[in-house]
Every structure is written in structure tokens, then in C-alpha cells.
Amino acid sequence: MDVSEIGYGAWGIGGKQWQGGTDDESVRALHRAFELGLNFIDTALAYGDGHSERLVGQVLPSAPHPIYVATKVPPKNRTWPATPGSAIDDVFPYDYIISCTEESLRNLKLDAVDLQQLHVWDPGWTVRDEWKRAFEDLKKAGKIRAAGISINDHQPDTALEVIKTGLIDSVQVIYNIFDQTPAEQLFPLTQERNIGVLARVPLDEGSLTGTITEDASFAGDEFRSFYFREDRKKQVVEHVAKLEEDLKREPGTLPEIALRFCLSHPAVSSVIPGMRRVRNVESNCNVSEQGPLSAELLAKLKNHAWNKNFYR
Ligand SMILES: NC(=O)c1ccc[n+]([C@@H]2O[C@H](COP(=O)([O-])OP(=O)(O)OC[C@H]3O[C@@H](n4cnc5c(N)ncnc54)[C@H](OP(=O)(O)O)[C@@H]3O)[C@@H](O)[C@H]2O)c1
Image 1 (tube, protein in one colour):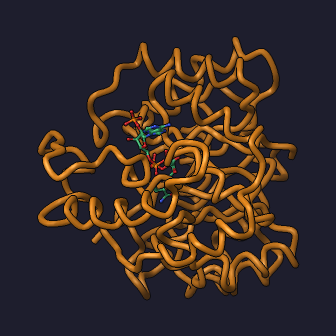
Image 2: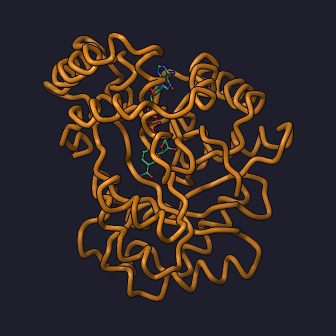
């Protein structure tokens, strides 16, 4: 699949966990992204309990070119990330993978999705049959064209074994200036095996846009009020200040450089920033024309890797 380098991360437009957007603005942002050549959307059944998928389904018929759509099967036990050692029967039983896919197709008003992904992963499931049979049967029925997994937060190496089975087509992984660990073992293997890579959370949920200040506030039930809780905004401000010091002489804004960082790795098929606003779509879609960052800058950015897990 020839997906655009910039894909559309559609978590935020699902609402609920992301507030401060409107459906109207999301629809305009999606249309603008299509106009600018974007042809790939990453959504999930869990995003706003199907709301993100329904919005995507609403805009697809008026897209000016074919759009590749990826979605995800939520864990049946609604536990993100997967608890290590959890039983696959509680998370991804065969019938459940099939029925969730059918529900996504109804939301998206499609006969098939281009990519179906498992929304969490545990390496213990590599040897299990349930997900393999479900993906195989969905492909045979023409309901999915490709199948992949979305790797648990900051644990890229937990996908190494499943990639070696040859039974998945893609992985989705956190990859950004702060978390560069996928480049160590995961990316060389995906390149060797010709596996698609979707780089998610390229802006570290907003940290790498430079807009998270110490007094930034989010609605109490918003995901970001958890992610940026306690002294985390202060930590972000300190890390971003050091980063900006190193970028002083570089052309382009921080979010542009953050996205170009992801695209500079040849293993990455598409980077999928969340972008609910037209202005963010315009700025982000502009990035793919700018090419990779220089080797000197990439070397400097290595020093800004930051080992943290704000999802916990
Ligand atoms: N487990 C999983 O599989 C999983 C988990 C997380 C994410 N994902 C996927 O990855 C996608 C991206 O992650 P994300 O959306 O959580 O985080 P992200 O892309 O790292 O950051 C999104 C934030 O950056 C802001 N933003 C985007 N472009 C900007 C720009 N040019 N200038 C300033 N601000 C900008 C957005 O603004 P607005 O708030 O105005 O939109 C939003 O607040 C998701 O949408 C989803 O598709 C998957």
C-alpha cells in the first residue's frame, strides 16, 4: 500500500478522552488533509466508542482520492496496555475479533478495512491460534486487507517474536524524539522482514509541539490531565527548553522537526499525528515535502531521548 508519509491520527476526533474539539472542525480538518494529499487514516473502535470511526465514515465518500483506513480491535477486558501474562481468551478471543471488525465496518460504512490491528499486544500470545485464525478468516472473507498489532507503550521489543512468525503485515509503535528505542531492534527487523511501521504519538501527546506550559490545564476527565499530571508539565518544559536550545539555528517549528525526525528513519511507513484542527493539518502535511533531517541534527537529537512512561 502506498500510504502518505503523514497519516491522520484519529484518536482525538473521537472526543470523550480528548475534549476541546468539535465534530464540525474534525470534519473540516479531515477534508483539508485529503486536499493536501493525505491518504491514510488510523482510527479504532475504542476511540469515542465508535465516534471516530463514524466521522471517518462520514468523510470518506467525498475524498478526492482513495483513502487507506486502519482501525483496531479493542481489548475485550478494556485494559490498556495488556497486563503481562493475561489470557488471550479475556482479551482477543476469535469470535470477538470477528465481531469487532464487523462493527467497525458498519461504523466506517465500508465493506473492508485496509488494515486491522490488535489494539494491545502481549508476546505470550505469539504462539496462540485465535488471532491468527481470525486474521486469516477476515482476509479470506475480504473484510480486511492487512493485519497488524499496535505495540504496548514504550515496549517496542515485545513485538519482535510476532514479527518473526511472518503472520503480521504492520506494527504501530510510539516513536518520537523522546522515545527513540524502536530504532534499536524493532526497526532493523521490520526492514529485514518488509513490515509496515506506523509511528504513533510523534508529538508525545503535545509535549513536542512546545505548547505544554507549567500552567496548561485540561478538563478533569481528559486523558491529558492524567498524562501531564503532578510535576510532569514542569519536566516537559525543562526537556523541551533543552531541545529548543539545540534547535535554535534549525529552520522549521518544533512540531515540524518532531515529525521529520520520525520520517527520517527509513523503516517508518507513515507518521500519524493527532490533528483535530485545520491549521495543524496544514502545518503537518507540509512536512513531507521537507525531506529527512540532516545526519548532524539526528545525532544531536539522540541526546534528547528521555526514558519515561507517562501512561502509567
Ligand atoms: N495504543 C495505540 O494504538 C495508540 C495510542 C495512542 C495514539 N495512537 C494513534 O496515534 C495517533 C497520534 O497520537 P496522539 O494523537 O495521541 O498524540 P500526538 O500526535 O503525539 O499529539 C497530538 C497533539 O498534538 C497537537 N498537534 C498536532 N499537530 C500540531 C501542530 N502542528 N502544532 C501544534 N500542535 C499540534 C494536537 O492538537 P489538537 O489537540 O488541537 O488536536 C494534539 O493535542 C492517535 O491519534 C492514534 O491514531 C494509538
